[in-house]
Image 1 (cartoon, one colour):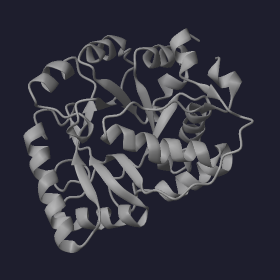
Image 2 (image 1 turned 90 degrees about the horizontal axis):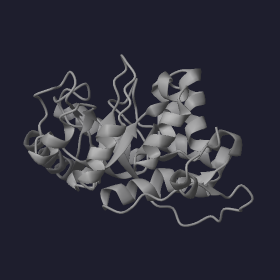
Image 3 (image 1 turned 135 degrees about the vertical axis):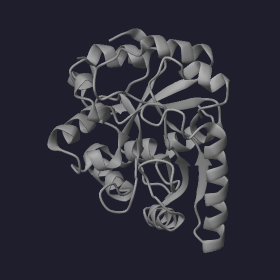
Length: 276
C-alpha cells in the first residue's frame, strides 16, 4: 500500500465506541426527481419516495439523476436545478420535512471536466467540491487520468457503488491508486443487506472493512425494488463494525460532502484486506 493511502486508514479495532445523540442521515445518492431518469415518473411518486426517505431518518438528500452515458444530452445542470427547486416547493406544500439539493450521477466520460466548466453537469449539492461518478458496466476503465484532471480543478470524485463492479474487486491495486489521487468510494445501503446478490454483498463489506469506502448512500429509485434502506444498513454496520464507523459513513461524511468539507478516513477492521 502506498504511503498516502496508508495515512488515510486508521486502525481502531480495539477502540470502544461511545453512544452519542442521534443525528439524521444525509443521503448523497438518490434518484428522487420525477420524470428525469429511471427514478419516479411523476411528482406524486417522487413525494412518496421522499416521504419514505424521511421515515428512514433522512433529513437532507442530494438528487442525483443520471447524467451522460445513455442520458447524454438530458438532465443538464439547469434542468436539474429547476426540478430540484420544484420538488422542494411541493415537499413544503405537502409538509414533508426533507431538503433536496441538486447533483448528478455522472457516467464516466472523457468530457467530464469540460462539461463541468461549461456548467452542463453537476457536482454534488452543486457545491463544486465533489462529483459522483458512475463507472461503465460493460468494460473496465482505469479512470486515474480523469481523477487527476478533476483534482486539478480541486474536485474530488466519489465512485458510486464500487461493489457492483466485479472488475474492481479483482484489482485492489487499481482501487488503491484511485484513492491515492483523491477518489472516495460510496457503498449502497441495500448492497450491505444482500438485496442485490451475495457477491455484491460480500464486496460491499470488503470495501468497508478494508477502510477503502467512506460513504454509504441509498441510491434509491422507488419504494419497492430499489427502496431506501439507511436505517437497516446503519444497524447492520453498527453490529458488525461498530456504531462509530456507522455514524461516520452514514451521517458524518455524507454531511461533510454537502457542506463542502473534507471526508474523514474510516477505521480499518481487516488488516489483511487493507494490505492486499
